Length: 513
Ligand code: FAD
Ligand code: DLZ
Ligand code: SF4
Image: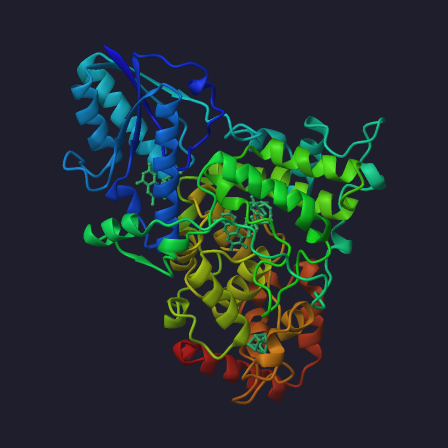
């Protein structure tokens, strides 16, 4: 009788206590399966990077003396689903016990629980779900942390995390620098200087893996970059990335956190989301490194605080939202938006320069930074009224770091307000003015950011005003949106009508923009 331990593709945590010592009775299982490649159309780099990292992880476990059964996608014994393979492997190894780490996705969590219940009953075996030892908060902790509060504000959560982990606190337990949040310092446009750091990532050749995926008929989209895959594929590489980010990039992270540029895709972002989300890096080691850089005078407080907030604040908070709202969160559509995604979401071929860059870059690199995701792509989708579930599937597929626990609350909640305002107290929408302020996109655009109506007018402008008009019954009394409605009140009826007409024209021909 032996114990099987399943390791999912986003559970590549070499620090996990499972691996503290090698036990010949324990067989670790990793499997490349169609049920995971096919639940959404993935970016090619995402499948390649996950498989390559899983393979490297399996090898490293073996080298450390563990027993590993690694099922490749084209292995003839592969039944192509996690649970069907578990059935076969449990029989093969005559397992008396099967264990897995709590999955981060509701779908997989359910599937494994159901499988485990049946298997344990039929075979008188034991199952156990253990912690993934990655996150800073427990899955179901959020409702308790917000007990008695009407609005579940991230900022409230974040301050509790700062205290709990004693991050950026002075000797009296007060926030360093006298305030919790330095966001107002972090909204600069990037003037082209300091120069964007060179791409510090090490390219990997996974041409053979790509050929296998194609031979097996695995569908994907985006540039595979199979022979120069740039993502960190094991913990050693991930630590090198972290090191590079902390020493050379972090000092500028804050200033240009919200900036966008057609000349610099990464700007001063960390590109650590993949390594974090597949658990090669622990969130606490990342933020402690950032804090240390500040204490040593190597990075300004505003940059360090902003970076730490993304990880111990937003990242943990959205995970808590996910588990408090699932199942059913992915069905929410508070604004009843139903338009299909325009075809250029899959090609980047649009004359709107901001979207051409943000989507084109996403297709090429499987990455876009936060403001591109939120204030260009998400903003357009919300203004145009695209179907939030369709959009959710697009985001879940395209980004290297996209796993449902983090992608869904960001897309459906933060960016589309489709949850009715659980995450975002007001919708993240803007006209061309914001994009023009934070980027150089408008300068190279076929549309005129100053015009609201007319064939050359920037589509964001009419769609922006039309959004407020269409959703007046929902937002008209929201004090945080009062300004927009005040401005609408001052408009001439003819102007309002022209805006609505322009918006209707745009929404009827999104494919052609
Ligand atoms: P940096 O800007 O360097 O930030 C550092 C780290 O902070 C990130 O690696 C990430 O772990 C964390 N972080 C920052 N913002 C968020 C956030 N809003 N939520 C959770 N963690 C955050 N992030 C994902 O990891 N996976 C997703 O699928 C994902 N989908 C998104 C969809 C939309 C519509 C939006 C608006 C945001 C989404 N984000 C997602 C958040 C954010 O855009 C990415 O984490 C970030 O761009 C990753 O690049 P980076 O590592 O260079 O981040
Ligand atoms: C994303 C992904 C892909 C494409 N393929 C696999 C796979 O073949 N095997 C696997 O174990 N995990 C894969 N993953 C990651 C899973 O989808 C992820 O573990 C679940 O969504 C739970 O978060
Ligand atoms: Fe985007 Fe409008 Fe600016 Fe063009 S003018 S880049 S469409 S915001």
